[in-house]
Length: 224
Image (cartoon, rainbow, N blue to C red; front, side, top):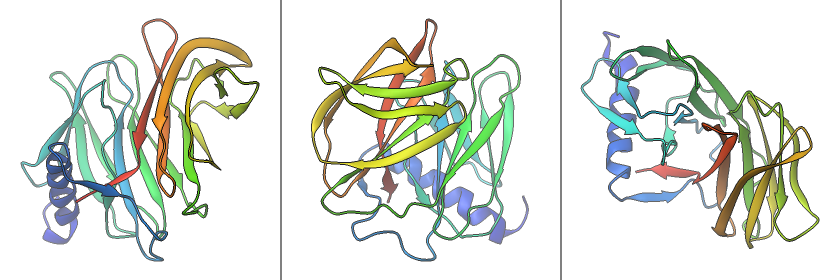
């Protein structure tokens, strides 16, 4: 990318990502998203760490398997933004455009060889200051229909989320643990969600692991 108008996003967003990794994070929104706001984040669903690099800039950040999701970055709506995922052997160019009011998650997919990508998008309308907004992102192609059961209760938070897709719902702010199910069968992967805060948004990612799947939770926060 050669023009400033097309590189400002990448440099600013990934610089913010590096800063956020060292501290400053704020809730994604407190009163609901702005009408013209657009947001993008990056997720590494692969087993090894990846770098995210901005086009036309030296700005970069690492997405480690133990913390695979970046924060969300506010970006200009309807403008193609470019960068790349890379490791020591391969790289994959990123080019994404985000609509007003949209939250785009750019995912580096698991697999050998080239780094393949997908973009999962949300247009949320579920803001409630008294509730928690929770999403399930199914990034494991082996788990063709993912769900989450509440441990110790006969309650399902999610059911039938297809691989490569997501579902979102609201719930009361509670401290619970969940267990993954795939194709209606309980999986060994469990996750303690901790004390979820009212008015905040969270995402749980179903990630491939060496044996079965693993679950990772991330607060949907805005890099500042």
